[in-house]
Image (cartoon, rainbow, N blue to C red; front, side, top):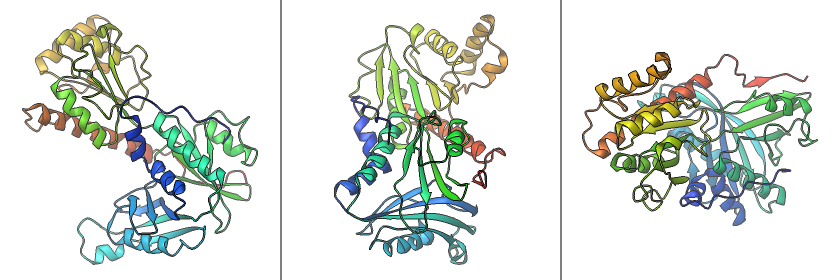
Length: 381
């Protein structure tokens, strides 16, 4: 709670995105002084509809925000939540999906979930307000942060929000080794980490920056893709050299809508990282080539370019003449999109979004199966 939260974006659509964040839903309950329970999947075994890190807020009137998978298991978790609304407390419980398998629900093959249940009952402390506000604000601004919660029996603890680089200046209430592990990038999403340092148990929740979709070209396909980005939880940045197309009113949910003088400086001021997804949809081959050449200098998770194979090969040949390796070009998705025989701008946007979602899922799976990733540790004992 030592670091000042970043200023909220005044860009059109920033507040709408923030309101959809589950942390903001939590803040609404805090502001209204209403009791609620947070259910978070710590780990899963077998076939489950949702994985570690999935969260659900359960209100006193049995309405929810978020989901941990639906079906009977979610109903059972909700029942457990309703029993905890009399006082603030914490439980870690196992839930089996065998009932759904026996009931013949085709979507479930059987498995189990370990779920962390935390009830928050008013009066709420100022520290609790601050912690969840930081989570919401950091998440909305794309700041990498971690919520660290000490597990002390059934007592609900206020999470401490930590950002990398705080090993020296971090909260003295947290073990030095834990802060060092955060600084060393040991906890990478998705999912939670249940760790032991000394004689104390902690749960670390990474709040990784959202994936950002950069659309270069705000024409008909770009417009349709921008609407889908909002629905599929991509943070959106739109870039074009035509003010009538790069108009915030056309992209009300975008984090940024930028009008540039020319595509030679298309990436000026952009901080594209490994969570970036670049889609090139400009109005001309030369502009596409200009943007692609700059895109290849970024660590983006995905680069896709619209156009025929003939156009792609011509651009690739030009770029190889400029010294760009063929292997780098082979990683570009072009022609862009999943082959669904798309014809209209909306259909083309659907095909592109399908490919983006698939690539995002592949990246998530690679992280989840990383042999260096450890969800539980006795380090520090």
